[in-house]
Image 1 (cartoon, one colour):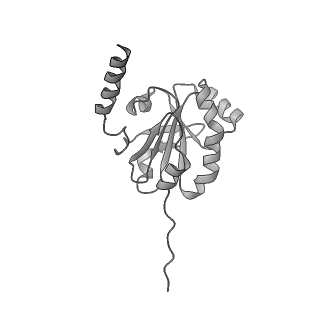
Image 2: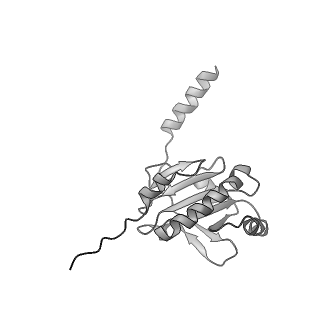
Length: 165
């Protein structure tokens, strides 16, 4: 019985692909307020420019908190190479998030998904959820873990070759 349920769930997963949320599809667009700012982050502003790593999280999630040092390292290593990292907080109050960010010394942008609309759009059912989007706006990685450095390196802009005179 358990094996049958597992098989049904696994099969459902194979056939439930939706445009905009699965690897290989163009990402859905969204806009969210940036924490402690009047700025709004709009994903489509990065199309044709930079890859983006979306990290859905909450302050109460131990696994999310555990990813912070690695996210900070990725920010230090890849920001100058063109990767934009943004963490999307789901349904928490701005003051609580601001204190958390300060305490944990988070180095990248934090976005506020106060009504979980973007999380719903991306079908985020568990956190952390990480989604790597290439510079063309295509989802190349989705998982509860962070993408490895090989996956990140693949989406970085290639250095422009200098032309000989």
